[in-house]
Image (tube, rainbow over all chains, first blue to last red):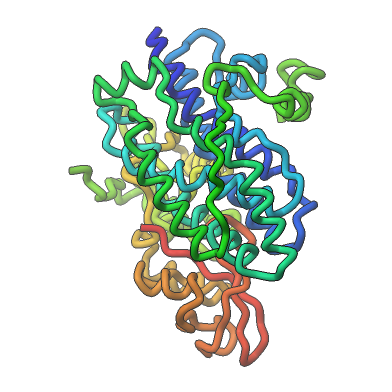
Length: 250
Length: 166
């Protein structure tokens, strides 16, 4: 089995899966019907992308592996998503801020990944770019609307950004797998998109009258499976069906 | 360069044209441009379809509907999902665009116009009810991921706009 490639696919896909799961929690609980529908549609896009990655990963793994077993039957430490995407929804400002901080990264990553020598990864990236450009537009618009909105919305948005900022740096941590695959032209060295990321984010925050946090303290660990306390609860919810009724199907 | 041409055996076209998009029943999957190839090889029809959006829940149903329609005409089939080249709204045929409009969904504009419409800069999306362009974006995501929600400020009708994907 191509272990590096398999692990790298999980690194890409788990971010989509967990970000999608968090957004999906808003189904029926969004602040308004339109935002509820938008968040769940973005969630659906992310799940669609996850499926493409996991189908590929299942092919590589072989045996009994399926997209579902990879999604639902791993333990917490086997998930490679960044800490950012597993953070809970708290309020709408928090949800939007988390999504925006991920979307900007996601789009920059896909813009590089579309040129991967790996044909499947390249195809998934090309397809996903079209969707993610709408995601970043949606979340970016809300950052501006709330940041440059009322006193209260500004305060909440600033608090969300201040709270989530510590998780941004992990996005650019290069894992062993990614490094090896980047050398073969198949993976992306994410440290190369770091400057563009912080430039984009800073520009939008300025437009939204928000302060870019100055804190230099950053959290990491997600990529190596060491998650925050929220991850276990998220997985308990997400995996419940498969754990309670093994092998159940629609 | 990846070819964006469709390879569909002529004999299969009338059958596939009868299969409709489960979320937009007036629209044939052929006019939607999701069928990329359909060829009769050694007695089995090999069909490739491509999703409009990766998470599109209609794809499984479309695959089943294709197999069912072909079976009714005596063909065994295998339906495969392909991601590349990625679907674009350019593949919706003129007949498909008209069907969308009649169904109450404004068809996609050109990429530049689409951006202007969705960023709310310009009022250019035509109301499917009264034809006025005095319309306003309500939400970038409508009833499905591929659509945005608009409302007409003349006749007050809300309607979906099929977002440009290119």
